[in-house]
Amino acid sequence: DDPVNQMVMENLLGPEGYKVTSCMDGMEALEYISEASALPDLILLDVMMPGMSGHEVCEELRKKYSYNALPVIMVSAKSSQDNIVEGLAAGCNDYVAKPFDRMELLARVGTQLKLRDAHLKEVEHQKNAKLLQSMLPPHVISKLQGAHSSMIVEEHKEVSVLFSDIVGYTALAATLPTMELIKMLNMMFSKFDA
Image 1 (cartoon, rainbow, N blue to C red):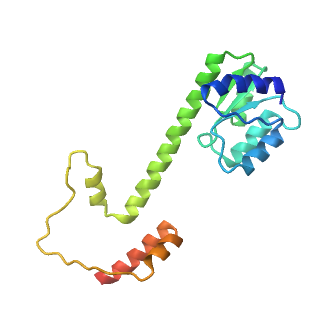
Image 2 (image 1 turned 120 degrees about the vertical axis):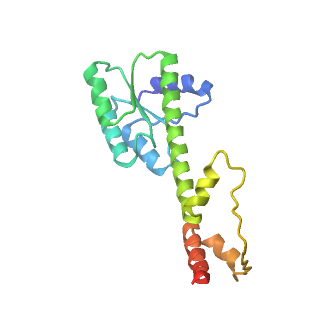
């Protein structure tokens, strides 16, 4: 909320390669986040602001975003244990007391960003695993994930091969969500097994 504090943060984080966007109060911050095309990687949130307190802003954020999806570090001159506990109870990931040490703040920011990145990688891994499970049988997935197998093929004495052309497939694939397309193809191919 204080332009001097915002300038200090920009001067601290900017040279480290971080892009800083400042908001003057809690309502402006909530508005910015709701209208942004992507979530910020991290929020540094002052506790004492006009209108809404940092605690109220953090509580509003936690109604929509998890700790991992949107890390919040509260920054405040209030540094008693009760103040820190109140901030953590409101939903912040970390709490830094003013005046803060430059290296400590950078380390805390870096840690929260690493935790967020690890969370995003895990979410992506789960999404990919779910997609793989919808397309392949479990024994094939197991072979693909096996560290010692260089080949996943099995020997089959007799094999039937069907080549087919689905009219309009390219246009259809461009318009349908991936999961719908896979369900449609599975339904079509299951007819051949009947």
